[in-house]
Each structure stands twice: as C-alpha cells, then as structure tokens.
Image (cartoon, rainbow, N blue to C red; front, side):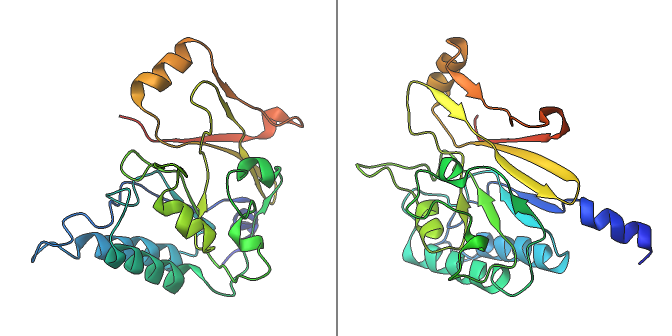
Amino acid sequence: MSPSSSLDDEDTFKILVATDVHLGYLEKDAVRGNDTYVTFDEILKLAQENEVDFILLGGDLFHENKPSRKTLHACFELLRKYCMGDRPVPFEILSDQSVNFGFRKFPWVNYQDANLNVSIPVFSIHGNHDDPTGADALCALDILSCAGLLNHFGRSMSVEKIDISPILLQKGSTKIAMYGLGSIPDERLYRMFVNKQVTMLRPKEDEDSWFNLFVIHQN
C-alpha cells in the first residue's frame, strides 16, 4: 500500500449500504425459506471482508413488525458473528447522542458502550414493514438496539412536527452529517412538508464543511 492510499484511508469513510432485506419473507416456503437469511449473511460477510467503517441499512430489515423467533434468532446470530469483535472503529461521533438516540433506553452508539465489543457498527432506520406499533411503539429494531447489536436512529416521536437532528461523524478530516427519517405514512409526511413542519437541523460549527447524507424510507 502506498503512503498516499494509506493517507486517503485515514480520511475516507467506507460504508456498506443495504436496504429492504425483509428478513423472514417466505420463511415457511420449502424452497425459498432461507433466502433472506442467506442474503443478510452475504451482506455482513462483504462488510467484514472489505473492512467497512459501518453498515447503513435503509429500512425494512424485517418483513413483519413482529418477526418470528426463527427470524429474530437468525438476525441476532448473524450480527453477533460478523459485527462483534476487537477491530477498532475508526470514526467518532461529535453530535449529542442523547438527541440522536433519545427514544432509546441506552441513548448512545453501541461501539462506545463499555460492556460491548463492536467491530462494525450498524446504523438503521425502520421501514413501513418493521415500523414501531402498539401502546409502547416498539419494533424489532428496538430489541436489537437494546441488545447492543444495532443502532436504530431516525425515529420521529411526533405526528405533527419533525425536527431531524443529524448524527455527526468524523474520520480524519472528513465530516458527515447523517440524517435519518424512518417510515411515516405518506399522506401524513406530505402534509407536514406542505405545512413546513419538517426541519433539518444544521451543525453549528463549520456548516459548509459537512457532507450531508439523508436516509429515508417512503413509497
């Protein structure tokens, strides 16, 4: 490796982007039952082999809001197999994590948890198939997040107004403002945009030095 490429690595984010895995789809089918698990295994294996900085999932990791025990078990197993380990995470988070992950019981990114060894952080918004429901407004991503296997972000707690505060990431001299918005019924989100009730907050310092990345899951 030349010194120049090594220098580039210090300032370059390497991100694997995947979406709509739909774990559990046709899980009872005799022929296709394991297809989604094989796909997710391949995604995570590629991330590990290419030594990506993090994995970014764009929603619908699960096909159903209440995935079966088989599907949950397969997901836990694969995330633990490929994303836990001693490899250091080469970027830092500069934003207030209590704002980014304020809806969670553990409002900080999993790789900074003293009780966990994470080699590849996974960030994910929820889609329309695996959106939070019920009295407690929980989804399968919240279970994974509580277990420290994944970082669920981009969740709006209001049905009238949305303030999207980005996760601010820095690797070397490169800065990313990562915005996320989990799935919201299209009519409601359209109405909020028309009424100017959707706000995207900007970093206060050096706002022009950030690369903006927006993860959204809508029809």
